[in-house]
Image 1: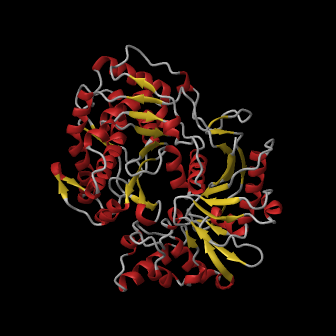
Image 2: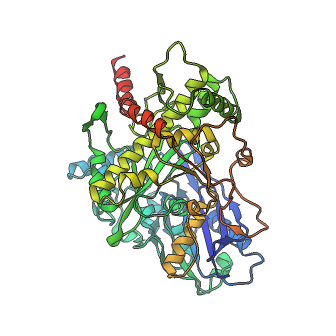
Length: 566
């Protein structure tokens, strides 16, 4: 079966796999590389390590395969500053490097003096991790290196494309994370580049499609990566875009929730809606129940160019699973997640599904959404003499779910302002894909379904970026295929909304996250029929949680006001 060779150059390792056009995949191979941290918040990687790891991972993926792949499709970490120089490569400054805080402040002031709002131009709040600020700092600390630069790319995928002799390229998703891309036009900003001292010819070419063929391998691809010559090379979206494509797809309205240590809701919105969401940077309008919207609380990444431009709206919670971990320690004596689930099942059997009546904020270490406030802290409000420890734990899980619900509602409002592609009823029926460790908790998934009012579809997240690579490449090449996002692959086990008579015993829940299935056998990428299940919302519980949502949203501002008054 014809296959696509997919490569993900992630934050700590390169992963590669052959994915056939019927959706089956061969063994996945990976090879790691180190990160060097320095004083003052520095984080760097050696681009030569990227190449070594890519070669090893590709060799592992191709081992035993006699058929030539149709193409090489590449994604990877975003928002790195990689200077292209003659001779030995300079260290890549990573997205997590925070040494350029002073330079970010200077850029903001310089742009403001020219009448340019940097955050509004870029569509995101800019800080020390902006690649423009990184470059300005580097020009001061190592001017010789900057003088030797012949070009810039913004991640290992772009670096690999350059090393293959195909020029300097950047996908628009990665570009929109740099602080150098104009969000509304999808072009490099001359204003920001000038303020940072970046000559225009140093910036890479931008892709115009979700996945774009940027060239073909040459004769030296064998020595560099062990690949044949004349192989099409597709630059897929950066890792955030490729992962979304691999989980749910990139059509407007597609969304998924991640519940790991942190959490987020990722939503694909049309560019018309995203353009109107410049309101998100200065909207202070009060809504029903005292609802207020903070400035710039959602992160935005471009997903394509041309007439079908879309954006990925990411509303991030600083603590999701971390809040649940804290609550188990604080309220349940350090109970394990499985033990806490049993207590939740018992509580539900006694009281039925529905809100605890408590309002909880999960912000144990500050917050990014629905407010951006590093000093905000967690709270549980509404306790009385009947409140028990399991009620407090359930309230924290409800608080995380309410934050996700705020993001869903705001995303729907944006989409409706551009084009009502889906009715409220259709949106309510559409399952919400959920990934991450929190998705293994059946009681939490019932809470999430009841709070959001949508069926919850748990999805195995293994290989999502690689699946996205395959989908991007197949479309770029115009191939007929049977590939689909993981949410469409996962087997669907419908869970009845009625509360269970006893604990649910699901063999998959104790198996842990699906990280790397048996590499010796071909499989449908990421598919594990026992993992994919849909949890239906309970109508009565939905009404109860919906009634509490305005008060929950107002609690963020109320706590901020209390802190300010102290």
